[in-house]
Image 1 (spheres, one colour):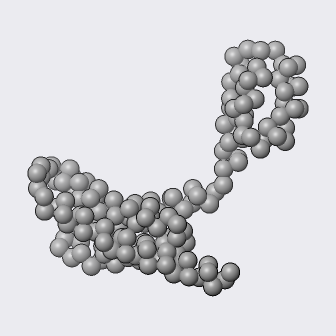
Image 2 (tube, helix red, strand yellow):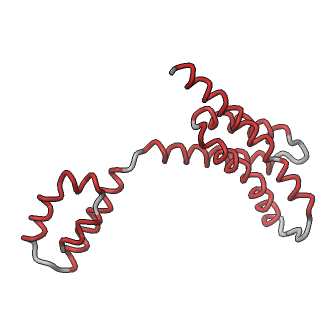
Image 3 (tube, one colour):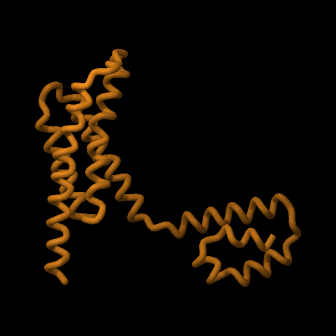
Length: 162
């Protein structure tokens, strides 16, 4: 039963580990106890996670959905998609300069995914069509340009504050 204590986060064990080990020693072993300890460990891990990264990833996913939606609804007009890639990439680059490549790649991925979604929805998969793939790869340019321009501004602001 004492091995179940390792399921809890390190900081939790440092604070409550000795007391919990005493409680576990006094508790009769059984499947209910094991299940309760596992549930408590999951709860401790969830409570220990910081909300900031989850919010950032959710916001990045929302921005990627907006880019994909724009890509689906603008027929031959690429300016709204490129503008969205630039603006969203810039914002994420300013916020997290070290992860500019990650936000640029995630935003870019919305373009080929939305293109594949459109092909699936229309039931006409173009196997071997190189033109749509190349058009999608071109979307990487504004995504990374916006992200790394934002990263440069973010690094400059941080350097000026220091």
